[in-house]
Amino acid sequence: MFRYIPFAIIIAMFFVSCKSEMDQEKPVVNQQISFLKTSGMQLVDDKNNTVILKGTNLGNWLVPEGYMFKMDQVNSPRKIDEFLYELIGPDSLKSFWNGFLNNYITHEDIKYLKRIGCNHLRIPFHYKLFTDEPYMGNRNIGFAYFDKLIEWCKAEEMYVLFDMHCAPGGQTGDNIDDSYGYPYLFKSRSSQDLMTDIWVRIAQKYAEEPIVVGYDIVNEPIAHYFEEELEELNHELFLLYSRIIREIRLVDKKHTIFLNGSVWSGNFDVFEEIVDDNVVYEFHKYWFDVNQESIQTYVDFRNKHQVPVYIGETGENSDVWVMEFRKLLDENEIGWCFWPYKKMNNTSGIMNFNEPETYHLISQYAKSDRSTYKAVRENLPDKVLAQKALNEFLEQSLYQNCYPNKGYVQALGFD
Image (cartoon, rainbow, N blue to C red; front, side, top):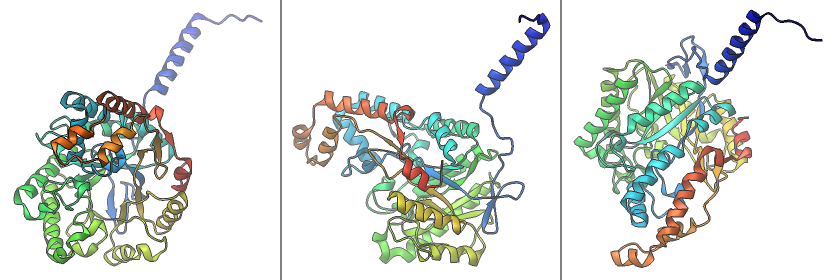
């Protein structure tokens, strides 16, 4: 039966409905997000609640890796850039890099990671993002992408850990940090000065930003190839850590510092002494038998010095292995960050996307002889088909065209 409703009530209902819809559209930011700091063997928030970090690395986004592009032989950022230049030329290359930076990780990816249960993201980056050196088709664009990511993560209430994956001069002497066969960082004053300056600039900009969980000073310093020099390199790394911490603390006394062990982050002998009271000690570990012994060295270090430890990279293994190791870390109350979030044609990670139909031409060219200009000319694939594959790569890598590896996600204890 029709009932009369006063006009004033209709108007009030309209505004309530509009307000409800607007509230649903706005991202809800948790006002309780606070700076994290170390307290004994744990990280705690401003109410002294323990926070165990659980998340993933946004690998390949700001530091391209050859194996993620299915071209293992072209395995460092500068080699990838040169390779793609050969394939498609300078203008198309710049367009590709801009598309890659804007497609590979978007707000939709961050929403998804929050939804499944991540509470933080580790962000590998190249030092060149903060210089005028050409990098991924641009110059000095680091803060633009950091700011964008921080905005997304604030909306989704997820912490961000910045990881200098590629340091000036190179910290490993291998491909992962774009170096030249030797860890020249530890022999080059100018490289150390530049690295320190970049970290100070980052710390100045984000000193009052609580969504940033901390600064991961350098990824996996010193490779195992340099065992004969390890004692000397370890000491130089310790001195560099001490210097960077001192200079960061002049502009930022709040944020937690994350320090990697040497020898791919596994060797804690580098820590000659505890130099700051807000430091997390980080190890990485891949491809081993899961048991307590596999992490006991780091547990012992934690217990002896009463400091937190954290595994910044692990994974790239079967769902069963990932589940067993994640449970072991949880039992030992060790924060973790599995590698990687997203990779093409890959089930050993959280997110997957399909390989373009003609992409095999790119992978084949990467395996071919490129040692002379003659060889390059003879082995180059059809440019139209190569461009098509790269365009489709950009399209496929968008969140809406990706699909999760459900078994891997569940192995991490995520929903």
